[in-house]
Length: 394
Figure 1 (cartoon, one colour):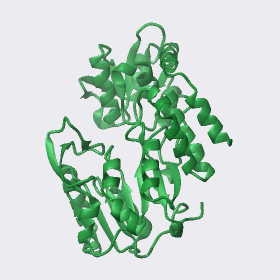
Figure 2 (tube, helix red, strand yellow):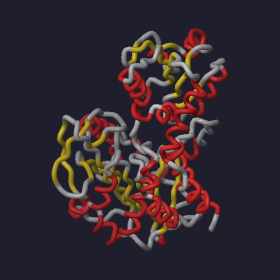
Figure 3 (cartoon, one colour):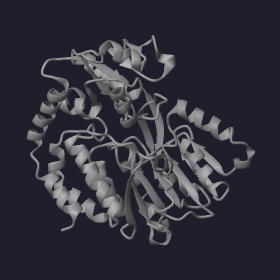
Figure 4 (spheres, one colour):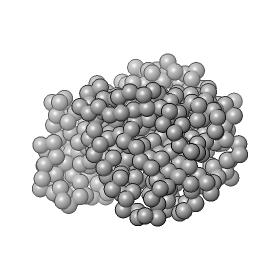
């Protein structure tokens, strides 16, 4: 039994209810036994969610602090926004500062350096007030991990390189212990930039045909073009959110006529079958299918959509805010017949870490599997499934 397997077994042996008690105790230890004032650091999507849930729980924050000068003096979710130095001056010795951004390291260190005596991450707050904040993306009740023990073991066995196995263990740990507020370490810029297109995991093709599922505003397409230049055959970019799709087409158009005819956009959601989805069309990066959504969008299987194109994909990327399982099932024929490299995000649901690699293994049993994280804690984690003839230098 290797080190990664031993560590996973230790994690799977932990008692879920006791862990929840320990989370609450850690929050009390860090924040104090009384109910202190709370300052939310970060006014973005995660900060806004934290503010809303605190208010709903009867513990509204006294302030928001953010480095964005355009927000100073305004309100977010009804709470005043202060510059960092002003927030620390007013509340540094009597409030808990909750860092509520996905990559916490830089802000954590900034507020400690400014003199905050109590800084915690949203991870500790969410774990300590479980009923208020969770589930949230890959953060959920720890007992679900224990129930999935066999699938977790099977998924770990798919990853042959040591870096992937270590990362898998770290991801199980983050989902189970929610302990990533301790001494957060920043992710190198190089690792962020290589997301979806790492040079060491799979080789590039001069005739690459990229299918970008969850294209957002074209940021992935632009990253691909910056890396590959004109060394590709075609790009098919899928983005169902109407507002975001307009930005996508505008950004693609701004690239100039050089790319006309090589980049194709679709206002369609990749799914298992043809139909419509109820969508939370917010225009944000986290836009997703939702039963509470107010917009209906068209969806279809990649097998059906790309059957109408001249050439099959050689590289499929999926970042679909939870829709990855259905999209994979809708691409079964393409995957089995043409063996494209698959890049699939694993952080939108707790069980996607093990469920999606196992599904991909069923679809492409001869592929090699790799796991890489391109952000802190448990975010921007992707599985890379690579056919033997595309293996890189890893």
